[in-house]
Length: 250
Image 1 (cartoon, rainbow, N blue to C red):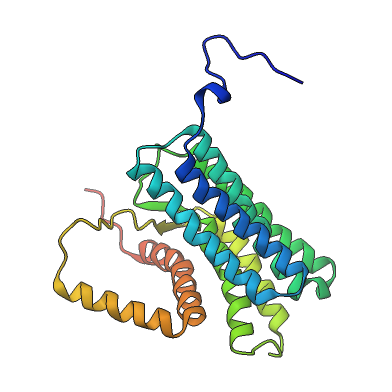
Image 2: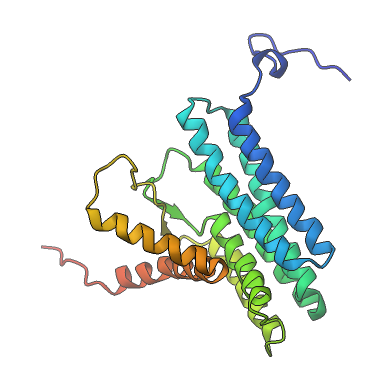
């Protein structure tokens, strides 16, 4: 059925879309879909890696759009839909297909907590754009939450921890924690204060080299450890602010 264009508003066909940034978003969406397919085929390590690939591509699309001055409302909406699949549905289904399905109702309910948490997190983020401090995220970002679940799956298969006693309960805890943390009011550093064009001490280059060497030597361990520390950092800072003595009112 053909729809008549709204008077005074250019149609999508006439307006067009930016190809380059949306290509990265489409690739991220494909990586999330591919993770779901591989989980259904019991290839859980490949599924976990695909989610991390989606994270890389998701981080690139916005930067490419800003560098090429090709931001658009369509790109923002497309990015949110892609994030929902790659960081909401995919990790939940990977966790469920791996171990949570053996836990009955509790398993699929916790998997849904992660999925619903990602949807709520993305909806809140879209409605708060321009009204919050860019230095901080409110709630754990959905890519980081997905990395907690996918990282656990990856590290267990990479180092043959799949027979670890009580592993299904560990996965259950990580999945529930990631879903709930996405919708909390805990603040997480956004890394948006890092400017690659700014001068830094020479020692920072050495630290970058060491970090890259560690990442290349043990990717699953380094990535999983980083995102676990990042997920805990918000609660540590919240506890520190709560315990910090408040200045007395004169």
